[in-house]
Length: 446
Image (cartoon, rainbow, N blue to C red; front, side, top):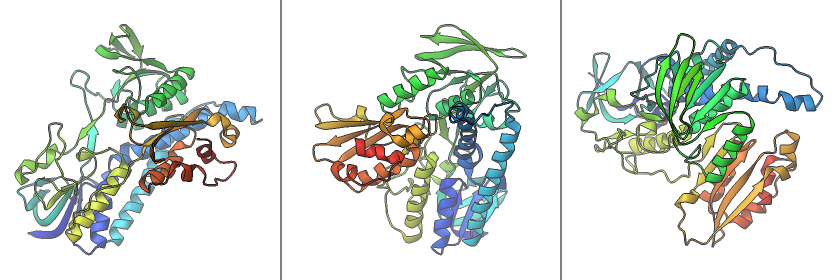
């Protein structure tokens, strides 16, 4: 029987980061992933990377009218989604090759197949039994499928099916107005599709600051995206050439469209691991239970990333993996004390960090500072001065949070993460000299 000091199950941003860090600290390490093509996980293969590549394409299409104002006459004659698919595949292959090279340099062994626990000290992969001292679970999450509206990969699709579409739909209805649904709405509308976005709640992006979600809603409506609030799908009928959707709620009517995209969340991807045989506990939502050091109910078994109930971002998963790797290799109990930024790559971009307004105490002495991109020279130069930055400052002049919507804000949010983590005061942060003309000058206007 083979034996490893550490095994990592799952090779997404959390898994490969953990394997690299553990191996570089001298432990004999095995990384298990289903196939070579799955290296990089959801983020690389069907999430962050392809989604942002697609959004980058649509942003250039949306920018054609601004270029015309600058004297550049360009006309969109056609949009070949198959060419975009090929470009995205090449990008994914290039990034995956880089990850594999890093793993090879760190001398991480890779085994392709599905791992299942036999007991607390052994795992089975492809019929082979392997023992371990410690193991880290990083199996991520998968798209949530609705029982009454199952995916068919044709007319009813998930977010991952976007990247295999053979042609751009003339019309698409999106159920779910979180980050994934709103990014999809930006992409399809930017490329010329008729888009209807359905929200079960009274606003889109309900987890973001209310001013931010309302600003995005106004922007979407100006672009012609049909937004239906307090609405759900009652029933569907699939026809040869379209799909009929009967709505229930505030918008009690029918929609006929080419595609229905379901973006109602993700669920932890750990049911195939037989974790009960290792006596690992899950919570009521199916996430693996961990303590603050990412130990499960068994102290030698760890879990990080989207299979635990923490913010579902690749950058969060990567940081958790680094911390867990130190704990595994050095028998420490470090915790994640870092602030997590949220980034949404809609058009316009959205970013935030820190406490939300709804979580503030009513009697708390808080100042709200706000600055608009309409006063920012670089935003005007770039042809997009929509949006604003909003922060909360407490009575001790400490910045509690930042919420931003506008061009380039996903690149600016790190400044606020640093300020909040390092307890830089509002006055100190605002008075830093920032280059002119830049988007980050907006901070000086707060």
